[in-house]
Amino acid sequence: MKKIAFFNRKGGTGKTTSVVNLSATFEKHRRKKILIVDCDSQTTATEYLLTYTPDRKGYSLKDVIEDNIPVKDVIERVYKNTPGGLDERDLYVIPSALDIDVMELDDYKAVSKVLEPLESEYDYCFFDLPPHLNGVALSALIASDFVIVPAMADTDSLAGFNYLMDHISQIREQGLNTHLEILGILFNNVIHQRAVQKMILASARENMEDLVFNHSIKAGSIVEQARFTGTPLPYYTGSNPIVTQYEDLSKEIEKKIMMKEMRKNG
Image 1 (cartoon, rainbow, N blue to C red):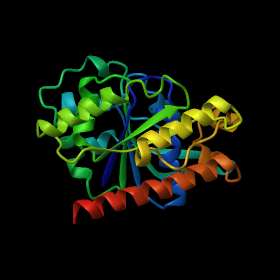
Image 2: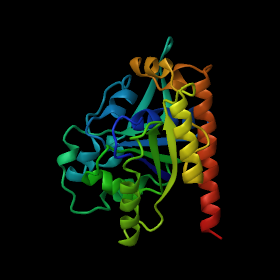
Image 3: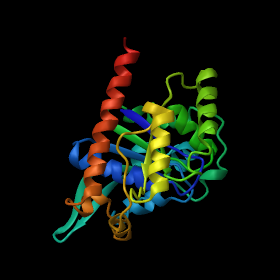
Image 4: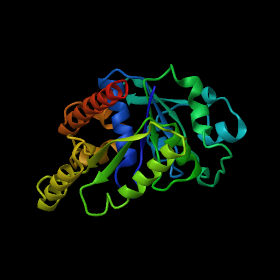
Protein backbone atom coordinates (compact mmCIF):
# COMPACT_ATOMS: atom_id res chain seq x y z
CA MET A 1 0.00 0.00 0.00
CA LYS A 2 1.44 3.35 -1.07
CA LYS A 3 0.71 6.09 1.46
CA ILE A 4 0.43 9.71 0.32
CA ALA A 5 -0.20 12.72 2.57
CA PHE A 6 -1.87 15.82 1.12
CA PHE A 7 -0.55 18.80 3.04
CA ASN A 8 -0.12 22.55 2.74
CA ARG A 9 0.19 24.80 5.76
CA LYS A 10 -2.07 27.34 4.00
CA GLY A 11 -5.82 26.64 4.06
CA GLY A 12 -8.08 26.81 1.02
CA THR A 13 -5.64 25.23 -1.41
CA GLY A 14 -7.86 22.32 -2.42
CA LYS A 15 -6.47 19.57 -0.19
CA THR A 16 -9.77 17.82 0.44
CA THR A 17 -11.00 18.34 -3.13
CA SER A 18 -7.76 16.80 -4.40
CA VAL A 19 -7.98 13.84 -2.01
CA VAL A 20 -11.62 13.11 -2.83
CA ASN A 21 -11.43 13.45 -6.59
CA LEU A 22 -8.06 11.73 -6.99
CA SER A 23 -9.25 8.84 -4.82
CA ALA A 24 -12.36 8.39 -6.96
CA THR A 25 -10.23 8.67 -10.11
CA PHE A 26 -7.84 5.97 -8.96
CA GLU A 27 -10.77 3.75 -7.98
CA LYS A 28 -12.84 4.27 -11.13
CA HIS A 29 -10.24 4.65 -13.86
CA ARG A 30 -7.14 2.93 -12.45
CA ARG A 31 -9.08 0.08 -10.81
CA LYS A 32 -7.35 0.61 -7.47
CA LYS A 33 -8.64 -0.06 -3.97
CA ILE A 34 -8.30 3.17 -2.02
CA LEU A 35 -8.32 4.06 1.68
CA ILE A 36 -8.72 7.68 2.77
CA VAL A 37 -7.69 8.67 6.29
CA ASP A 38 -9.25 11.96 7.34
CA CYS A 39 -6.97 13.72 9.84
CA ASP A 40 -8.66 17.13 9.72
CA SER A 41 -10.98 18.28 12.53
CA GLN A 42 -13.17 19.98 9.92
CA THR A 43 -14.13 16.43 8.79
CA THR A 44 -14.84 17.71 5.26
CA ALA A 45 -13.59 14.59 3.47
CA THR A 46 -15.60 12.41 5.87
CA GLU A 47 -18.83 14.29 5.26
CA TYR A 48 -18.27 14.53 1.50
CA LEU A 49 -17.52 10.86 0.89
CA LEU A 50 -19.94 9.34 3.37
CA THR A 51 -22.99 11.37 2.29
CA TYR A 52 -24.79 8.27 1.04
CA THR A 53 -23.35 5.72 3.46
CA PRO A 54 -26.19 3.81 5.13
CA ASP A 55 -25.90 2.94 8.81
CA ARG A 56 -22.83 5.04 9.60
CA LYS A 57 -20.86 3.45 12.43
CA GLY A 58 -19.94 6.76 14.04
CA TYR A 59 -16.35 5.80 14.89
CA SER A 60 -13.26 7.81 13.95
CA LEU A 61 -9.48 7.56 13.76
CA LYS A 62 -9.44 9.00 17.28
CA ASP A 63 -11.40 5.97 18.56
CA VAL A 64 -8.87 3.58 17.03
CA ILE A 65 -5.91 5.34 18.63
CA GLU A 66 -7.39 6.27 22.01
CA ASP A 67 -9.89 3.49 22.68
CA ASN A 68 -8.31 0.61 20.73
CA ILE A 69 -11.40 0.11 18.56
CA PRO A 70 -10.31 -2.34 15.82
CA VAL A 71 -9.56 -0.35 12.68
CA LYS A 72 -11.66 -2.67 10.51
CA ASP A 73 -14.67 -1.80 12.66
CA VAL A 74 -14.10 1.90 11.96
CA ILE A 75 -13.62 1.86 8.18
CA GLU A 76 -16.64 3.01 6.15
CA ARG A 77 -17.31 2.15 2.52
CA VAL A 78 -18.18 4.88 0.02
CA TYR A 79 -21.41 4.63 -1.96
CA LYS A 80 -22.57 6.44 -5.09
CA ASN A 81 -26.21 7.42 -5.36
CA THR A 82 -27.71 6.21 -8.66
CA PRO A 83 -31.25 6.13 -10.04
CA GLY A 84 -31.28 2.39 -9.30
CA GLY A 85 -30.11 2.77 -5.71
CA LEU A 86 -26.80 2.90 -3.90
CA ASP A 87 -23.75 1.64 -5.78
CA GLU A 88 -20.79 0.35 -3.70
CA ARG A 89 -17.36 1.65 -4.66
CA ASP A 90 -13.92 0.19 -3.88
CA LEU A 91 -13.21 3.33 -1.88
CA TYR A 92 -13.05 3.42 1.91
CA VAL A 93 -12.72 6.04 4.66
CA ILE A 94 -11.37 6.17 8.18
CA PRO A 95 -13.39 9.17 9.43
CA SER A 96 -12.08 12.10 11.43
CA ALA A 97 -13.58 13.71 14.54
CA LEU A 98 -14.23 17.31 15.54
CA ASP A 99 -11.95 16.98 18.56
CA ILE A 100 -9.06 15.22 16.83
CA ASP A 101 -6.90 18.35 17.17
CA VAL A 102 -6.81 18.08 20.96
CA MET A 103 -5.81 14.43 21.00
CA GLU A 104 -2.39 13.93 22.57
CA LEU A 105 -0.22 11.18 21.13
CA ASP A 106 2.29 9.33 23.27
CA ASP A 107 3.52 7.46 20.21
CA TYR A 108 4.09 9.27 16.91
CA LYS A 109 4.06 5.89 15.18
CA ALA A 110 0.37 5.58 16.17
CA VAL A 111 -0.99 6.04 12.64
CA SER A 112 1.58 3.62 11.23
CA LYS A 113 0.42 1.02 13.74
CA VAL A 114 -3.24 1.65 12.85
CA LEU A 115 -2.47 0.88 9.21
CA GLU A 116 -0.30 -2.21 9.77
CA PRO A 117 -3.16 -4.76 9.46
CA LEU A 118 -4.33 -3.04 6.24
CA GLU A 119 -1.06 -3.02 4.29
CA SER A 120 -2.01 -5.82 1.91
CA GLU A 121 -5.68 -4.84 1.54
CA TYR A 122 -5.37 -1.52 -0.28
CA ASP A 123 -3.37 -0.17 -3.21
CA TYR A 124 -3.22 3.42 -1.95
CA CYS A 125 -3.84 5.30 1.28
CA PHE A 126 -4.45 9.05 1.02
CA PHE A 127 -4.20 11.26 4.13
CA ASP A 128 -6.25 14.46 4.19
CA LEU A 129 -4.26 16.67 6.57
CA PRO A 130 -5.26 20.00 8.16
CA PRO A 131 -3.28 23.19 7.38
CA HIS A 132 -1.40 22.78 10.67
CA LEU A 133 0.55 19.94 12.20
CA ASN A 134 -1.53 18.50 15.01
CA GLY A 135 -0.31 15.27 16.57
CA VAL A 136 -2.28 13.04 14.24
CA ALA A 137 -1.12 14.95 11.15
CA LEU A 138 2.51 14.60 12.19
CA SER A 139 1.93 10.89 12.84
CA ALA A 140 0.38 10.58 9.35
CA LEU A 141 3.47 12.19 7.79
CA ILE A 142 5.63 9.72 9.67
CA ALA A 143 3.49 6.91 8.22
CA SER A 144 3.59 8.27 4.64
CA ASP A 145 5.77 7.44 1.69
CA PHE A 146 5.15 10.70 -0.16
CA VAL A 147 3.64 14.17 0.22
CA ILE A 148 1.53 15.95 -2.39
CA VAL A 149 1.25 19.71 -1.88
CA PRO A 150 -2.02 21.13 -3.25
CA ALA A 151 -1.66 24.84 -4.11
CA MET A 152 -3.44 27.68 -5.84
CA ALA A 153 -1.76 29.71 -8.57
CA ASP A 154 -1.36 32.73 -6.30
CA THR A 155 1.46 34.39 -4.39
CA ASP A 156 0.51 32.91 -1.01
CA SER A 157 -0.12 29.20 -1.59
CA LEU A 158 3.56 28.24 -1.54
CA ALA A 159 4.53 30.65 1.24
CA GLY A 160 4.81 27.76 3.69
CA PHE A 161 6.66 25.41 1.36
CA ASN A 162 10.02 25.87 3.12
CA TYR A 163 8.23 25.19 6.41
CA LEU A 164 7.01 21.87 5.01
CA MET A 165 10.46 20.99 3.67
CA ASP A 166 11.94 21.70 7.10
CA HIS A 167 9.45 19.35 8.75
CA ILE A 168 10.20 16.60 6.25
CA SER A 169 13.93 17.05 6.84
CA GLN A 170 13.43 16.84 10.60
CA ILE A 171 11.32 13.69 10.27
CA ARG A 172 14.01 12.08 8.12
CA GLU A 173 16.95 13.23 10.24
CA GLN A 174 15.35 12.01 13.48
CA GLY A 175 14.87 8.58 11.95
CA LEU A 176 11.09 8.72 12.22
CA ASN A 177 10.65 8.18 8.47
CA THR A 178 13.87 8.19 6.48
CA HIS A 179 12.22 7.73 3.07
CA LEU A 180 9.58 10.48 3.22
CA GLU A 181 9.76 12.88 0.27
CA ILE A 182 7.73 15.36 -1.77
CA LEU A 183 6.02 13.71 -4.73
CA GLY A 184 4.90 16.99 -6.25
CA ILE A 185 3.13 20.33 -6.03
CA LEU A 186 -0.38 20.18 -7.48
CA PHE A 187 -1.91 23.43 -8.74
CA ASN A 188 -5.70 23.55 -8.38
CA ASN A 189 -8.46 25.85 -9.56
CA VAL A 190 -6.27 27.29 -12.30
CA ILE A 191 -7.72 29.92 -14.65
CA HIS A 192 -5.34 29.87 -17.60
CA GLN A 193 -6.82 33.05 -19.06
CA ARG A 194 -5.42 35.04 -16.15
CA ALA A 195 -1.96 36.30 -17.03
CA VAL A 196 -0.74 36.37 -13.44
CA GLN A 197 -1.65 32.71 -12.92
CA LYS A 198 0.19 31.74 -16.09
CA MET A 199 3.23 33.65 -14.80
CA ILE A 200 3.07 31.95 -11.39
CA LEU A 201 2.79 28.48 -12.96
CA ALA A 202 5.66 29.18 -15.36
CA SER A 203 7.83 30.53 -12.54
CA ALA A 204 7.09 27.55 -10.28
CA ARG A 205 7.95 25.06 -13.03
CA GLU A 206 11.14 26.92 -13.89
CA ASN A 207 12.38 27.30 -10.32
CA MET A 208 11.12 24.04 -8.79
CA GLU A 209 11.53 21.86 -11.88
CA ASP A 210 10.28 18.32 -11.28
CA LEU A 211 8.70 19.24 -7.92
CA VAL A 212 5.69 20.62 -9.83
CA PHE A 213 3.30 18.19 -11.48
CA ASN A 214 2.99 18.62 -15.24
CA HIS A 215 -0.78 18.30 -14.94
CA SER A 216 -2.80 20.92 -13.09
CA ILE A 217 -6.54 21.11 -12.41
CA LYS A 218 -8.40 24.03 -13.94
CA ALA A 219 -11.21 25.93 -12.28
CA GLY A 220 -14.76 24.86 -13.05
CA SER A 221 -18.20 25.15 -11.50
CA ILE A 222 -18.77 21.43 -12.05
CA VAL A 223 -16.38 20.71 -9.15
CA GLU A 224 -18.67 22.67 -6.83
CA GLN A 225 -21.76 21.02 -8.33
CA ALA A 226 -20.33 17.57 -7.61
CA ARG A 227 -19.52 18.63 -4.04
CA PHE A 228 -23.06 19.96 -3.56
CA THR A 229 -24.49 16.56 -4.48
CA GLY A 230 -22.04 14.70 -2.22
CA THR A 231 -20.58 12.87 -5.24
CA PRO A 232 -16.87 12.82 -6.19
CA LEU A 233 -16.40 14.38 -9.61
CA PRO A 234 -15.46 11.17 -11.50
CA TYR A 235 -18.71 9.58 -10.28
CA TYR A 236 -20.72 12.73 -10.97
CA THR A 237 -19.82 12.99 -14.65
CA GLY A 238 -17.69 11.11 -17.12
CA SER A 239 -17.53 13.75 -19.84
CA ASN A 240 -15.78 16.84 -18.58
CA PRO A 241 -12.25 18.18 -19.22
CA ILE A 242 -11.56 18.35 -15.47
CA VAL A 243 -12.32 14.65 -15.12
CA THR A 244 -9.75 14.02 -17.86
CA GLN A 245 -7.24 16.21 -16.04
CA TYR A 246 -7.62 14.09 -12.91
CA GLU A 247 -7.14 10.95 -15.01
CA ASP A 248 -3.95 12.39 -16.53
CA LEU A 249 -2.76 13.42 -13.08
CA SER A 250 -3.36 9.93 -11.66
CA LYS A 251 -1.16 8.48 -14.43
CA GLU A 252 1.56 11.02 -13.68
CA ILE A 253 1.41 10.19 -9.97
CA GLU A 254 1.83 6.48 -10.66
CA LYS A 255 4.70 7.17 -13.05
CA LYS A 256 6.51 9.43 -10.57
CA ILE A 257 6.15 6.83 -7.80
CA MET A 258 7.51 4.13 -10.10
CA MET A 259 10.49 6.29 -11.13
CA LYS A 260 11.32 7.21 -7.53
CA GLU A 261 11.15 3.58 -6.44
CA MET A 262 13.40 2.54 -9.33
CA ARG A 263 15.99 5.10 -8.23
CA LYS A 264 15.82 3.92 -4.62
CA ASN A 265 16.31 0.31 -5.68
CA GLY A 266 19.27 1.22 -7.86
